[in-house]
View 1 (tube, one colour):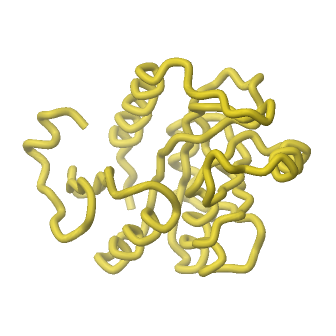
View 2 (view 1 turned 90 degrees about the vertical axis):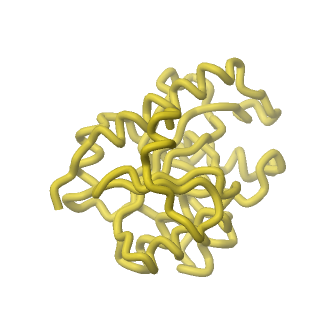
Length: 200
């Protein structure tokens, strides 16, 4: 967020992290922690306040290096995440692809990705990496499967967006080549989301 937005937006108090009410359409949340437990805890509190639609944007590792695009909508998320199992015993989760999701997917116009969510970044085992690569999985992250499991359980809307950052495609960790570029991609994606006005 810009300094101007932080100054003039009303802060949502009582929740961990930086949480701002931007307008009648958006609450912007950041710095609440990493991983599924952190974001699901926040989403449970926001749900108690009446929030019914969730858009997540975060970083993900690549399982396939030949990808050129940086930003993707996750249309399927495989789970080895403990938080997801608290909402469902399924192995994979998809968003509820109804009017709300389709509207944002069309407006954002990002390509789709299959993601694998895990609780242990940097400790993905070789057998799991190879398994998900064979199943056409493009990204690995920590949150998407749990977010979709949460939304499915409560019958809410959710859309997960990932930005390609590092890579484990060759079974070793390759850190981001240009962190400034990734931050700029994140910033532009967030601005693009906030500019979209959805009529309920």
